[in-house]
Amino acid sequence: MSNFIFQALNGLSSAMFLWLVAAGLTVAFGVCGILNVAHGSLYMMGAYFAFTSFQILGLNFWLSLVFALIGAGIIGFLMERFFLRRIYDQPIEFQLILTFAFILVFDNLTKMIWGTMLIIPTMPSLFQGTIPIVGRPFPIYNLFIIFAGIAVALIIWVILNKTWWGMKLRAAASQREMANAIGINIPMLFTAAFVFAALLAAIGGALSTPIRVCDSGVGGAVIIQAFVVTVIGGLGSLKGAFVGALIIGVIGALCTLYVPFIELFVLYLIMAVVLIIRPQGLFGGER
Amino acid sequence: MVLEVNDIVTFYGQSLVLDGVSLEVDKGEVVALLGRNGAGKTTTLRSVMGLTPPRSGSIKLLGIEIVGKVPFQVAALGIGYAPDDRRIFPDLTTEENLLLAGHLSKRKNGDWSVERVYNLFPVLRDVRTRKGGFLSGGEQKMLALGRALMTNPALALIDEPSEGLAPLMVAALAKAIREIRDTGVTVFLADQNVRFCRKTADRGYIIEKGTIQYQDAMKNILENEEIVKKYLVV
Image 1 (cartoon, each protein chain N blue to C red):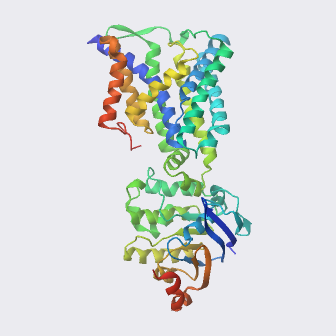
Image 2 (tube, chains in turn purple, red):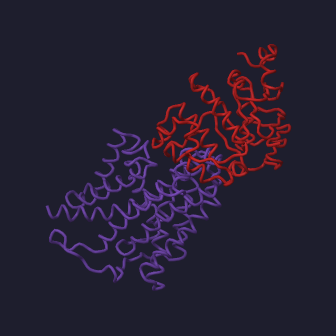
């Protein structure tokens, strides 16, 4: 039983990375209508920026996080302002091709700048150590990740439901033209929403560097998991992204403990079952 | 003049919808645009709002040229728009729909408030916490109009206000539109319900095949059987 609880907690911390990536994917899709295949690359850029500022420039953990957010925010801004904006009214294939091209660009850009080396995790001294949970040492950092993920979920909820900006996002998400006609500067709102989505991915990437290996191909791997999460939760639903991430994170972790040889099979099986029973996803069609 | 539309030509995709529409709305007037389905009423309003920009011609709001401006700029200059299909923000509550429009208003001198909209349409007060997507068609119609007013417009553009409403609600809406006019908002509405326009509008334009065919005071239009038969009776 203690194995089960311990491993479920581990799963919860990996679920938070999935949540952060899926949340940004959901914001970009829900507001701008952009299915950003390169969203995992923004996670990767967040990881590389955090790694560079922490391990190479020697900044502290929090400053590295800020550095990663600024870097990814600028990239998100440039992507939306100069590329994605041109294809909002085009068929979705154009988005897939363009954003897929961005994966290739970011993969090779990281190879050019950082080489092909792996980023080996280094735990900041701040988070070193463990605390006993069910009689076993649980890393403080993993606990921090769980709280950080939940904190981000609360922040997103407050932004969407309690601020004017969030109200504009909710209005523009479902009635873009009417939102424009009552005075919302839609191009500016979309840029801001996309940058916001990029920041969510970058938080995930930056927070992953102390415990996860990162290389120039991680963007593609991350986005596939995020798609599984959003398909289960319902594309466009933040609640769905959160629940989907919990399901995949925790069940995935438990599978590695009990049935490691069929872990991936189980995850895709869950997705297939959800698609058969509820093709719109668990929370699809609501917001 | 609040609104001067001069010889606008508007396409919807490849098809010509407005073939040189000209009209004027003076301050304090309620002006109706009448015509059958497909005559070009909605497109005229969308052209003014910048949602379907005209290819040529001029549209002036309070003397300022607005052709070439995008909708949120037109809204900021003082046009409140209530579309025929309502376009309520479904994820926002009734009150949030109104508050957002008020927040976005660039004309802070106006004095529309949520309370005032509720007084105009008491039904909305009862559904203030309900999400827009769960309102009835009639409630959405009123909310769309209330939302337009919350932007404190100099000119309210109202598309098909009476369409699909029960007769009792049509009467209430006619009364509301006169009240809106009395508060100093100029109204330009498009509708095909002649009796509704008779109750609300001072003047009327009749549009057919994308051009204005006739204009007169509303009461003269109704007395002119030939015109009514030719352009308005289905």
